[in-house]
Image 1 (cartoon, one colour):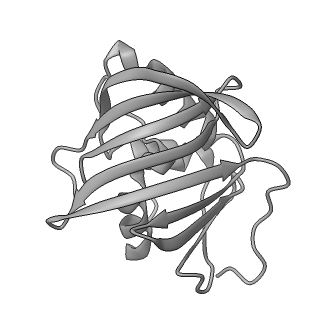
Image 2 (cartoon, one colour):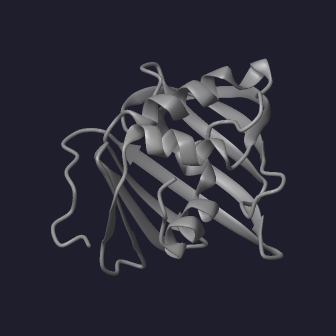
Length: 172
């Protein structure tokens, strides 16, 4: 398994809903759309702009690299393939009690909003409650999540785009 820098796990824990983790255990059937979106996202280049407790966080995934930056700092880039994303995310938990809340438009695209609870027993990743906006093409457009991280509530909001995605210049 690939060795990741500690910041990767901190960021992923804070934004687990934004990355829509795949199940380590079988999700209940109500979560099929959510887990299918996670699998599709792992195979699709994307640019995610987020806030975690009001602080900026950004990810660019190209299907060969994952680049992240926190608080508008320097980009950190590491090799990352779709299979590595799927393998690492399978270990972080599973979704349960997913339900359709409503339909909304996000950046001009119609999306179904799902509520989901994510459990991460036996891991260092937090349990979370999330709302996930999934477009008709099966890709995640937006997430809003709340989790308990080291005894405090962490709120994260993310928007994801899929057009013209390129690794950032100067990532290392």
